[in-house]
Length: 458
Image 1 (cartoon, rainbow, N blue to C red):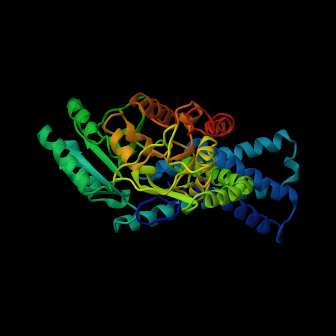
Image 2 (cartoon, rainbow, N blue to C red; image 1 turned 120 degrees about the horizontal axis):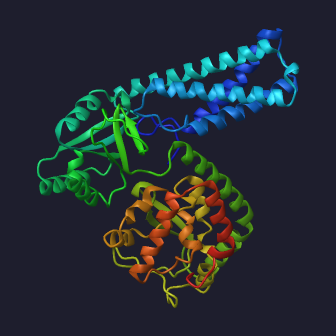
Image 3 (cartoon, rainbow, N blue to C red; image 1 turned 90 degrees about the horizontal axis):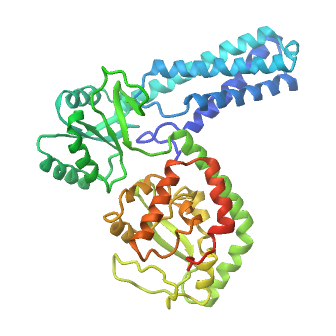
């Protein structure tokens, strides 16, 4: 997910709310200091305490889910969580002062005023941001496009209540009422094929229509939109279920992106840092490789190929060219084999050592790829395997990566059998379901020793 501010589709980036809380902590603390003492206080003790509290409030807010997307949720509940995060962070701060026996070093009036003012400003800014978002959403901006499928009272309630109040941030662009299963699946496929730009699909059917839901999921298996099941359970108290409340309706998430706004921001920061370090360290290697590619065969230094990125969008993936310039039939991409006559004099070596992949760190830096994620396949291969491998397209829920869980486990290179592709997809989905920063770092570490070379690297 890109974190550029966009008034048309995406939410305000979670990272901006982190910066907002840090700024509020610093400015309110120093403003109250100025009001308390009548001059700007530059004491290291007071400034250090501001830094400590900024760290605490951000950490507690992450744990309480403050920086996750609150699109479609209750503002009062959101503000309650915000206040709780600030109160808890100040309690931890006071506990730190007590444990270090340093309470006497600070003005109690300043500390109390700082607590109250920072909480008030944090709530006020979030109310203003929410009001701003609602105002532009009413005009159709900053909204997710939704395909609604269903029948009955719940379906009509959702269409009427959410459809008429776009301040929730969801635009119901197509509403298909179910009457006949065979006609419905064909109608859904026709609708989605005609408009590929839906962000979400809401299935609003009674629980008894489980067979219909199964057919719809099968029909939508080739598409990367988030799919939510909204069975009409507003009056039933659910326990221990993973649900997303949207505008007061229960949504059972059946196939949604595994990364929320905050974790996507964390992964993006990780990608930028790792790719910049890699480019700096590997630049002395990339320059000679580029010269060798140019001097040993005719053609460009870099090879550019269209691949599918996150949510099935086309991206350009860069590699050092390892083959002689040749042409293939349209829609056909022949995988490299162990003895391939198309390889240049240095092509085989570059592929075996994965040096040809190094330009993809620039893909990561520009945001089209991640350092770790499912490897991007050629578009014709996607078209072929999505029919043969269950949940194949779900691997496009995240950005493709330079390396991944499949690569460090030996599932790389030529997929000359269906079983090999199934194993690769199995590893990709396992990675998506269990993502963490620690897992990424582990994969990066193992790639250095295990993933760049191997018997399947050719």
